[in-house]
Length: 148
Image 1 (cartoon, rainbow, N blue to C red):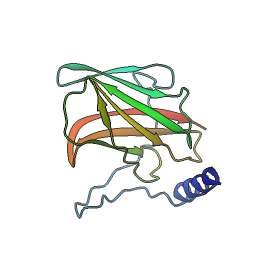
Image 2 (tube, rainbow, N blue to C red):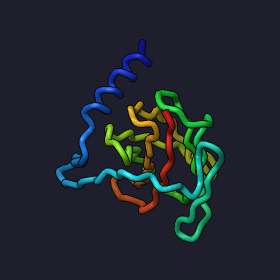
Image 3 (cartoon, rainbow, N blue to C red):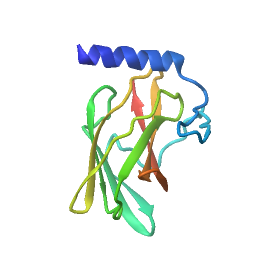
């Protein structure tokens, strides 16, 4: 029943998805949606990906693979650094369906979070995970695709 409800809500968001996003907190920020998906340097559907942040190699992993919507995912980020209130905004780049805001727990040198992605009517949905320390952007994000 829960999956059916989540699916129905995801469809509503997909149908009603706006072309621009207005961020809450009275700071009006618009996200323009992309129309062309360029190839990604690394595919989180296949492997763990490595990114450079503050001159360090940061490893990102999403499981299970391949990534699918409406399924609980484990997000692991290793070697990012120390942050008091690490959180993220997960949102679509080619269709806006709302923000997912996972919270992280740090164990050793790895941040762990669980999230569920909204379903979409597009054949390929590109998502972005943008990281924050409380409300302060880290200027670190990564993108991944989910195929329908």
